[in-house]
Image (cartoon, rainbow, N blue to C red; front, side):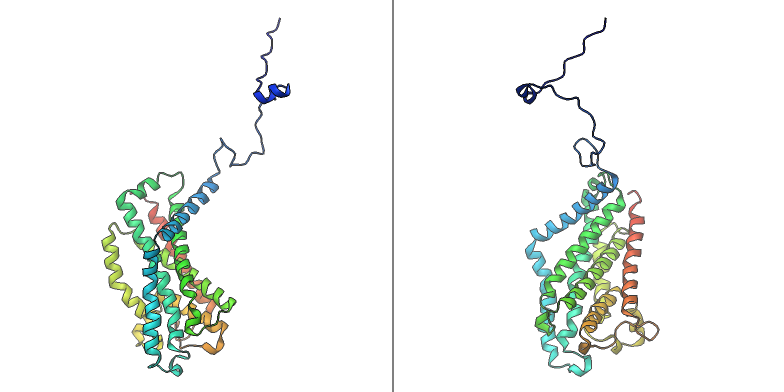
Length: 306
């Protein structure tokens, strides 16, 4: 004599319909987002990168005064310095008016500040203990570093896009292709400077040391970038230093992007390799490779336990 089978569980809905509830069976086609199931590793890593980028964008939107102050310096340089020297420097010397010549340098100045701040923020997060809490997330350290780099690149590019709106004030047309080329150059510059900043930050323990290094090297890097005056007017040793200056590559790529779209706005020579200018694509590839190598090295150092 066999035991009677247990009665099926009847929910209120089934009682109203007069039917019994079907047995629950697992769905083999369930996606990783199904409640009760863990997301895949790749999805977790991508969500972490998205969260870090979103955090940086929220910080940008929550600090409009800070953002405006960072944009104020390049705007003043462009309007006051550029406007004052435009009457003193003839167009024949630079190939374009001085404000037009100065514009790529000011775009680069705009994106470099938020890009460098990513490195400072990494050090302060480590000192405050926030980074230790962040490392408890079920994602790799490399992902967290990539998220910080992506967030810094995005914020820097957004701020650069704001200054790009002033292109008409310096005599550049609002040509969609020209604006796209300049935006692509700023994104590339933002990525490379952010990666270099992170590579420096993972090697330092104190934000004061980072600030001291910036105070020592930033002004020489700016003046050796070709953003304020042509590089061919510098002595030979200074041009050699400019050839390894990442900011000079960013300025030169932006300036050559203008020349590529507007051949009549050709300017004085910029970066040179062994006495000649490299092709634009090769220069951009070298700039990108610099950022990629810096990020790989930073990720290698960041994997080490504190």
